[in-house]
Length: 262
Image (cartoon, rainbow, N blue to C red; front, side, top):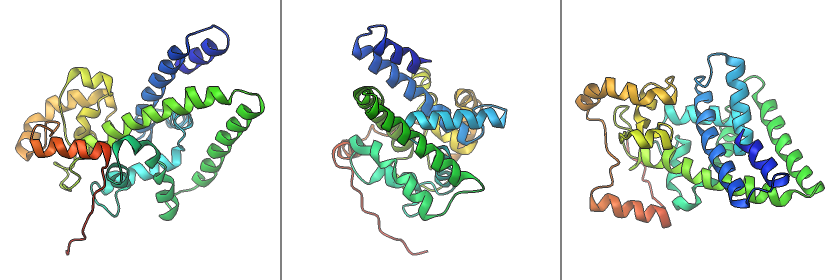
C-alpha cells in the first residue's frame, strides 16, 4: 500500500520526492518483519498465504524467499558459530555501515551448502528473473532513476536497520552458544513498535513460531525463567569496553576468530 502511494505520488500526484523516499523506506522496513515471520510460517496461518507474503516481501527487499528461509533456519541452528552461522559473517566481517550488501552472502551460503528443497531452485530462478525484468523495464521505459533513488536507496537504508536490529545487536558479542544466552532482550514498549519486536530477539530464538507481536507478552510471562537462566536482558553497551567495541564495529568491524579444540 505504501509503495503504491509513493509510486503514484511520484509519477502522478506531485508528492515531494522526500515523501516518496520516506514512504518506501517505511514500507520496506515493515516487510522485513513479514519475510522474517513468513520464514517461520507465522506470518499467516494459511500456508499458501504465508508463502505469498514471503515471496512478495522478499521481492520488495531484493531477496529471494527460499534463500532467506533456508539460510535463516541455518542461523537458528548454528547461532554464533563462526563457521556455520551465516549471519555471523553478516554481522562481524566489516563495518556496520556496510552490513546491507553483506546480506547477499546468504545466496553464496545457500548454494555452497545446497540448501534448496523440492522446487526452491525454480522459485529462486523466477524471483531473480522478476528482478532482472523489472530492472530491464526501468531502463527501457526510463524510470531507472526512480528505481535507484526510491527502491534501491531505501533498501540500503532498511538493510542497515535490519542488520543492526535483527543480527548485530541481538547477538553481540557473538560468542555465546547456550540457547538461553546466545541472543538478548532489551525491553522497551516503544522499541517493540519501532523495530517490531526485535528488542525481544531472544524470545524469538527460544520460541521461533511466535509471531513478532507476541514477543513482548511472551517475554513478560517467561521473564522469571529467563532470570533463572541468566539470559541477557539489556542492550549490553553500558560498559566502556562494550561501547567502544560498538563504535569500532560501526566504522571497521573486522573480527578475527580462532578455532578452538573440542
